[in-house]
Length: 505
Image (tube, rainbow, N blue to C red; front, side, top):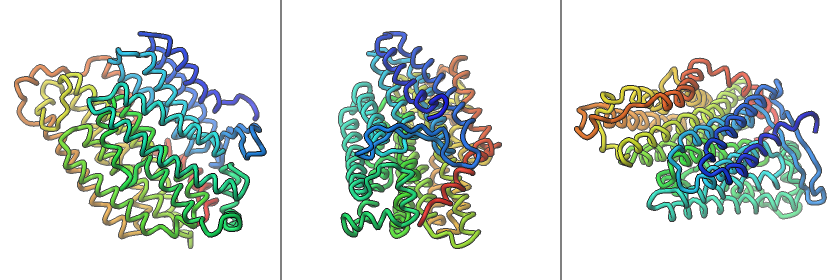
């Protein structure tokens, strides 16, 4: 460990803020705002210090329990760094949106900050033991935030969320215990090197028999629940719709990305050959996730459930890109397609996180102004009394649609650019998801903002100055990355090249 331990500081900062917020009473939100602002600043500093060659940098390593294969091991590359920035931005957005929390604000914001710490740890830990601690640390605050501050059906929704994600965690834990018993290591880097050399599978077979594929299935199931991948998605609509909107922002903006990140950091490096063997059924599930998510969104009348299912659809593109690239790199054309798909997946993770969190923020504002109504048929013509609201939410909606010039387009374009040469059937069928999503988004715009204004909405309040100021940087990011995606790609692409060079399918 050399120099200032930036990653440890980033993880510890929200914990310290949580302790202060817990006893800050009505000032808890101000404490959380300052903490998340400091976290964002530190995450951006880390982003600027990542290695230019795409390798793991800012490494912190400390012996913990060597006899058990446990050590404190942190690091960040372009993938980790981007997820740290995303987590910091979305948590700041969530805290800003939670200005109406009046019941136990100290506990509420303390739990939000603990969740942020869990996210930071999950995206930087490189040893399974303490990575798993961070993974679970994010689950527990989310459960209580839904259970204590959610809607009328918050109890069943929180329980379903907890059971599903805990089942996924158990599958992960069992698979990794088998790997540890076979190798004596829990270090992701060491295990990835063994997988690339073929010795990981040899060690597992020697100790446990031909179970490598089953271990891969256990790991995939653990991450599939978190993303989620169909048919493991059924917990999501209830959790997203019953959670307070600021917490839904965290669920869709950051926590769902933990599953995609786990696939890229753990599943593919360690179980690449097994994923390649399972490629066809995995691609089928990814396509089902894309198309089913879009169809389900089209059938909803509750705006939160519309965008809950839309999130399933958008993350399905990430799964499509990951599973499609699981082929041996037979030539330059295949490697180029793999790089395009992987760049698209990472960009989609970031862009969807920003856009989806913004949409749920707008829904929270809509509910505040309407007395809690959020049905797609409850409104109409809101662009007349609230043109700024309609305009800014419209940008976020078109970003979710994938309109060229906005951030949502870039990741999806790169994913399809990479997937078509690798699996043209899966890519072709998945285009249905794009078409249905466009219809869903345009329907929302038409029914909520266009048409005659109902009398009860004639005095619908437009965004005030503070809300405009809060949304300006979020909308600015959508426009900036839509026009200049190289601001992210220049740092992410070296990591993509590095990862592909070290993966074995």
